Length: 150
Image (cartoon, rainbow, N blue to C red; front, side, top):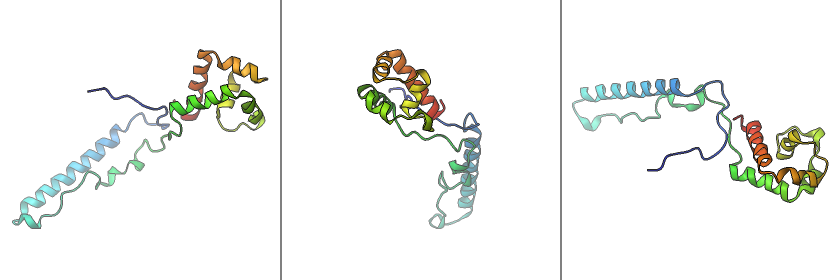
């Protein structure tokens, strides 16, 4: 059997490190509901009249939106999408520079991230910077960190 691995960037941006405590509470409530149902069924003489067993998600604690880790970041782009965005800039640097305005860069788009490393003056300079594999990787890592917090 193959090992599982994380297939995308991004993760939770919360103050809690795990859902362990919330899962304990949820499992405890599910076990309690199951024990109550078993005791109720044992007292009924006719098993056809027995109520339906509780499900895993019948517990009020099963609502993951109320757990401490609520508020995790959502992944909008996969690794392949991020690489494709950077390749588009590398292939057409003139268009990317024309569309980029550093005064109004409020989002962490790819050109804003590149401008954190170099002062963008020409398409040749931009293409030369991105032709280095290490610079390419640095830009992707910073883009992920700024957009997904990891």
